[in-house]
Length: 196
Image 1 (cartoon, rainbow, N blue to C red):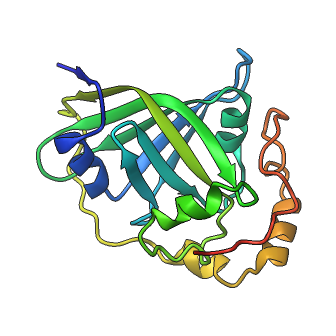
Image 2 (cartoon, rainbow, N blue to C red):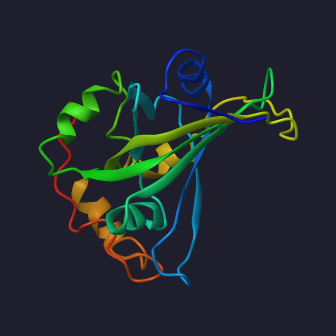
């Protein structure tokens, strides 16, 4: 029932761009390491850059497993599910890289998010994923669920932070600078954010 595609275009791109949430899956190389699966939301915080590349904004959270795994080995799978309309699941298997605030590519990447206010959610990095395999499957067992709106709690919590207080917040967390398994995570202290 599944089908593979050479790129992210047409119907697949439209589907990805229309979804209100997606999931990331990563793992360290160590066989006994912690596998990570994370939901990503907030409308406008991901973009299809071209037929083989997706980028999403990596916001403040209580850990940095995805970033740490990408820094170690780059492997990532992104998944979108249809919770409304016809059933569908799209997976992008590929290689990811966190582009941090002090990277010269960072400002140009932020411009691709069409005016998204990157100062309000504790932005740590832009994750850029290059697709190696794109697949869709039926999604027949995925339930219908209705998207009402984005939650405002994350924005209200982190909008009050400036660069120094956000960096201090991260430094006070056990699993930001290093992962649960001790891999390098988000480099601290955070460089200043220069919004486009």
